[in-house]
Amino acid sequence: MNREILRIAIPNIISNVTVPLMGIASTFIASRACGGDGTLAIGALSIGVTIFNFIYWNCSFIRMGTSGLTAQAFGAGDHKEYTLMLWRAIIVALGVGVVAFMLQYPIGELSLWFMDTGNSETNQMIADYFYTRIWAVPAGIMLFAFNGWLTGMQNAVVPMIVAILVNLLHIGCSYLFSIAGTMGLEGIALASVVAQWTGVAVMVAIIYFGYRKRIVRVSMREVVKMSAMRRFFSINGDIIIRTFCLVAVYTFFTKASADTGDANILAVNTILLQLFTLFSYMNDGFAYAAEALTGRFIGARDEVSLRRCIKLCLVWCFAVSFIFIGAYIGWWRDIFMLLVEPGQGDSATLLSVAERYIGWIIAIPLAAAMPFVMDGIMVGATRSRIMRNSMIWSSVAFFVILYGLSWLIGNNALWLAFTMYMFLRGVFQYFMSDRLRDIYREAGER
Image (tube, rainbow, N blue to C red):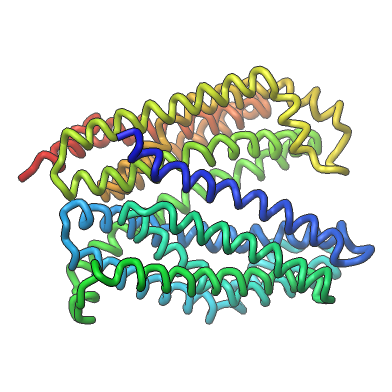
């Protein structure tokens, strides 16, 4: 069972690590691609990437909704059902991608208005970046569908390979278009278009040649069958609400940091949140393993394996948490300074401010160990309503603590709210599933 967990977790951890590396490379290229406007280019790139992260984050329901249903069909050995899930995921992803592309002007103008920097040159860079990269959105959403389906099919290696390929191609094309060429920030956006559409082409080829003997012939009428599509959209609707709450918490975390009026606190909170993100990259891998294996064992009606899988996934996540706690206790200053960007502020001052709040970053890995695995379990068991409700109540707790205590304990209220938000997500899901008994019962049904 440990081998099965690591077989899925490790490739996903590697895929996660490639994301910040690509971001670092893009920032490096942007700073050198626009001549004397390097600082403006970095700022414009950061805002442009934020806009697309918002779009993609809100489309992640396609991956999560596809993964659990596919894993259950895989566990049951139902070739027809997981074939239908592949086509449903493709149709939904293509539809959402095309709609997003067709609405690019209102989405773009609203985003540019909301993210207005007050500098016309920077605003123009953001606009050029947005209206170039928007061509990649249908491909990016399609990759969500393929990744969800492959995860459900217990294959984490192909998504890892494609993620590495896409990110390396993005870096290479960014250099070619922006530095070797003369496209500036638009070159980085065009690189994303080339890389993501290439990723889609590679995914299609791998699925066709690797799975054609396991994919059966189905009719379009079966693919769009009303009852099946209703269940698919019901699950995805719950995940959309869950994602909206997630985005709201992270958005207000940044807003509350800025509202302190202290640039040092804003910078420190941003860097400390990156430390939490480093931890989340690791535990996300085990969340993927939990969702793939939970769905598989429920589909196979294998309660014994399901119990072992969940128990060991939790053990792995808590083990990772203790490793990070130890690393942060012993070397947080060194890690912190690696994340301080030039020009972000006086390093000694930032360290002094961070020392007042580092305790929260040491505590969060323990508080956040359980919710990652619980998310994976609920995705695999298609308990989207529990995910939705637990996220709603956890988000309510975040805002109550933040605005109820910020006047009393200042920035500590923000970190207390965020820590409790993470902790309560896992606790609520555990008790809303009758301490996981509902999940075990489903696997035990014959």
